[in-house]
Image (cartoon, rainbow, N blue to C red; front, side, top):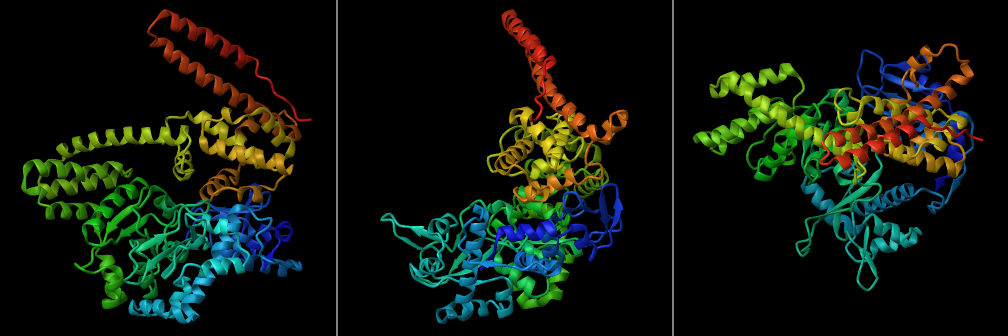
Length: 629
């Protein structure tokens, strides 16, 4: 059973987000928006903003945001359907339910619904099926309680080749879609089969609690395949952008302002069951930039707790640099040899575990101890190499005071002059700048094949961090994107008729522009809150931050043009922006040619470039604006 999209849209249009949020948060008007103290993290200065015009909310502190349904889901810890039902009841709207045939849904929604159905199926197998006893026995040996199994949606895939296939057919679920998310496979002869048969199942959730993938762990000794089989990447699941357990842990992470990162599913589940809830797991993959960026929404303080074996130590060392680049305060906790978080908390209990976390070392102390165990300080050549390695992560840190104290720490530890270490630090900083600049240019000016916008959104929002694209270009493009979310059809048509993707330099803006253009020409109109939902979570956060500002558009322009009638100001402002973005496009090409002229190998090449610049100057002067009919 499902609620029709038209009914959901009716409820969303009838509900006013300011009225709904006001029931839970004290709001006051500021400019065009309403502000209050964020209910999702502790703060003394209001950074929680609600837009009546766009029907969205956004916190500039923890970056939580979305539409009216998302607010109720986050605030009350309820599902999307429950949020829709609650609002419908408040508004007196009668709900009609349809059979869940997946018709009329987006591709993403279809895959989410399939995963939800299958997760229930796996959970029922574990808790109620006779064959599920083998999985229940496994979890009981690991001291996992029934209520914990339910909380994490743990499951079991029946042993056999067509049990899940039969269930999918019974539910009229498209087998091609199930193949797409890796629930079933296909033999060379074309027959489909269960891919996770005979395994215990760990559903993997998005930060909002939706099932995006599954991990299956083998149970039987006669199973010669891999210990874990994971869902393949799909339009709803990219492994490097998901932290296992975040949907369960995010509130506690915000509350404690600290996250513990462990390696495995059972590690996290055992800690959560013991009452340690600010934990996430990387789940068999090295920590990625995207995972660090995701975690930074909730805290900047991290304790790494990886296994003490070689693989765990290597993962810790690699993770330190990634986290430092995202301005995290990083500490590393170590457990006794032979212990992992699961075994330790079951053996010694919560209090002893928390004491271990309190004793976590600064990342520098951890790396130093590691190099000492490797014997690197026994040989002068290796010692010099190790000390340079200790200085490198210090160069990543922005905080000058913290950087200085760490250098002093290294100086005292090895009885070295600070001046000597400062020179090494300067070299490391220069290398870091070159590396960062190269990466930024690649990310900002080229297509990011993974579709990741995390670093883009973060970097373009921090003044002075991006040098590869002039700030004037970024600011002008940003104003254009804002105007697309002003809910003014005349303005939208004016922009879409006069700007092409090629006029925009930043890939994040190109992607937004393409989506808006396609959607507008298909639908003929749109609501900003609905439009934002078309994008991934990171792009949504970026759009909320730039469109929900107190001054949604450049107030300085309006101050410079007081004589223009108010009803014409937005139209005139849009025309000026369109001209500016086109002029900047020509200016950048002209400047590029000018540099080439200065370095030309022959007079012929220089003359050709000069002629090209003259033509570009002519086109720049003759920029025309097409007005909407």
